[in-house]
Image 1 (spheres, one colour):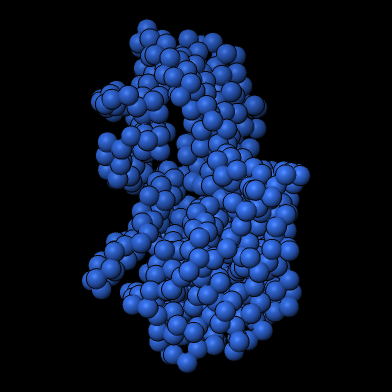
Image 2 (cartoon, rainbow, N blue to C red; image 1 turned 120 degrees about the vertical axis):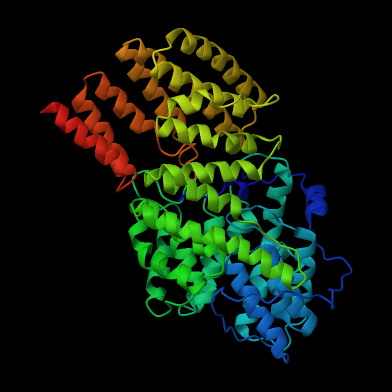
Length: 547
């Protein structure tokens, strides 16, 4: 499962001898603090059920706390913070209500955001209200104190804080925050101590995903990274007695979000949207499993429902007088586009691509430029050459938009036999690709992918121009380069280019008369995307040509 690398912020380093100043500047000492005792939150049905027992005299606080947990399990972290704060306002002595705020102010698998100062204040507030807490509550609060290096944990966390400070906040590395690793270690011990507790296992699963090193939780040959396999086994066991728990169903899907093991989450995927029918994210989430097991029509269906749930959520919050705290439309529509593409639903894919483009009108950043290019990527996939040539040129200095405009236009020209025009477009694209690589020079995952997009588009158009000239060996070599350049881009969720580069390689091999090689390429594509109708049709064509 590709893990969002935004949750990585620095590299592990040796502890410097002179780290005293760093420790002083990075120490998480709580400031004078009082919660907002007027805090309120909307009531949101349709997110499942939770009945965690917490120490409080207020039924209103208990109810709000459990609603906050459900929002957290739905990855609505800002809504969860708002709800936990409202719970604390109902009972200012509720340690777990303060714990909930601190928990959701921290990182998650999609976002490294770590509102440290506020989180430490809420941890400190909870620590001071543990007199009547249960051992379980005390253990959870103390575990979170480690994540934020609260002063009470200095003996354990001081060396880890030194590592953070020694590297500095501006690093672009993808390594794990040592405080997150320490928190995961503590949560593992709690999962051992409470082996039948689905909520503690949910917390541990989340912590382990955040603390898993590298870009993926499973290797290319299907082996688990770190303790991911162990956590998947724990989730699988506990789900047999907790089929209605949104947390462990959700994390089961995340934990085995890889084509080699996704089948283990099929039952959870089939349940989750029904358990939380108004949660945009939880309705969408089964699509991750469905595309990995070849259920593309189901992936389309759940993402259509998720997009509708986005609109319902915004309306519900507005009706209760609250602002929307999270907008899932971009990711859900992006996934809907990909699922529609894989299901060969051209109209749905194009409609979704155009809808996504409307979300970023005139927005000057690279992701918006990529989104603005999705209609062109879609038209190339469905070989709509005349429609491509009718598309207007992107306005302004838009490197990524210009890149895909020139790529699509050049492919269309080559396929229509307009070779002089295709050659000229290739010259222009090479200049655009150079400009993109000169602009995005950092080592962050995002900028590496932007450079890879430039290489992908250039190699792909070179392959098409060579194919049009019947230079088959050159066309195959360039398309193989496109496949290689696109590997990391299409390893994202959803695949940014729609998993089309290997299919294109098979097509070029077919046209070059290399039917055996084409069949092998299409079979590889089918292994990578089980149930792909595109790959299955390519295999059939290759076998027919060989006969």
